[in-house]
Length: 235
Image (tube, helix red, strand yellow):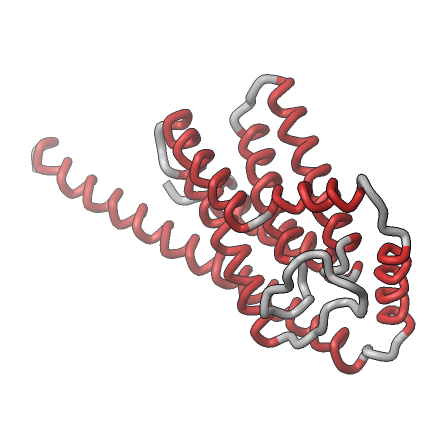
């Protein structure tokens, strides 16, 4: 068989390997998402039922009551603005812009796909968790309108970790300039903390809600970065 005859066969074999690697990546992503979801549902159920009268839940409520009793300007307005860093519309807008810029910068789909999967996967795990977990909002005055979802976990906190943490991962992976990596890392750390504290201050979540949201974002980022950006990432 000539070299020209062998080329189509090699191309077909390469295509099959690529297709198989993406199938394996999808299965690993699904397995990771299910494990995170199961852990969140289990903890949320305990907090909302078996542990309802525990010291942990009483401490949870005491933190919110203390913050609510000491609300004052300018913190009320500052926390209102800070919440927009992780509002749905903000995350979608920043995510879309970043997706386009990443595609143009890397000239391939792996990095923008990583960010998209990080955001879509996070919100999917969050929403599916709230459908099964029934935990009321803290017993204080809420400064924001409460969506018809469980208080556990904090979607704002999880989204901020997935978005800004994902951008920081990509900045380091790309070997970006020192100032850009420093800025991305600072945002990945500070924005989730500010968002979490704002949600507590505004009476929308318990401390355990925002901690669970942060863990959701971190765990899912670990899964997506390992599967889509690691050594055995699909090509």
